Amino acid sequence: MASVLMIFLDGVGIGSNDAGKNIFIKKKFMFLENVFGATPYLGKEKLIAENKFLFPTDATLGVEGIPQSGTGQTSIYCGVNGAKLIGRHFGPYVHSKLKPVLESQNIFTALINKGMNVLFANAFPQIFFDYINSGKKRLNVTTLMALYSKVKLLDVNDMIAGKGLSSDITNRRWNTKMKYDIPTITPEEAAEKLLNLSSKNHFTLFEYFFTDHLGHGRNKNEFDILLNDLDKFLYKIISELNSDSTLLICSDHGNLENIEIKGHTTNPTLTISAGNGARELKNQINDLSQIKNALLKLF
Image (cartoon, rainbow, N blue to C red; front, side, top):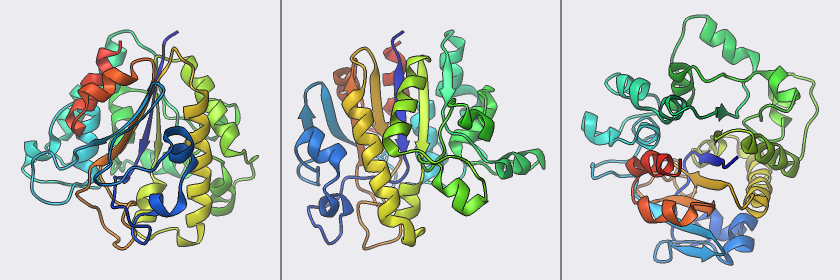
């Protein structure tokens, strides 16, 4: 079965060619250097390897101000200009005027209506379900989209059974921060698990938000651990993607690429397409609002 795997990285843009500011220039990540032979920067935003494309995506959407997650992610998943619809960038949560848009136009629902199998591969701890069951609904765009479209939200039992991944990739933080006692896995094992899950579904989404947290100055003591895990994970995914499958890695706004500040940037976001349909995605995506329709065309 042809499949599309989308990996959403929160807060990752293409920054300057300055190792003092840009962590990607400083660290020389494998998923960039070993795949594309270089790290992108402003002035050299496009890289090409065999059937793999790295390119910039505009997150400002023609609206003044600093891009934010609420409008940026709504634009990605709904194929609309969320910032223009409400007249400003907004986040981190979904603006009240955009909730009906997210409910009716999100990519999960669009694919389900086409008869496609959809998987939201992130597993959630019990504290998250306690929060939802309490009646509180202040959720990020992705989880709210899953609730609207009735896509299953995975729990710890699903994760242990190999049906989903922890948000930190390795399960480590579930044990150290939330007092679970579950096996940890390597980033490479997590990548193999996600590739296997993706092969069984038409569309699979995995969301990684620690990139944005690190850009905001959070999780300082875990900075290298989290980024090293992510690097190994993405490198394995890109390197072992089935030729019949399509991979899209994208983001909602810049942040991590400039560690001199603790806020978002107006830089273009880092986008990577690979596998079947990679060139089509690269040719069709110029800003965040074009991602959903470009993906739908693959089906």
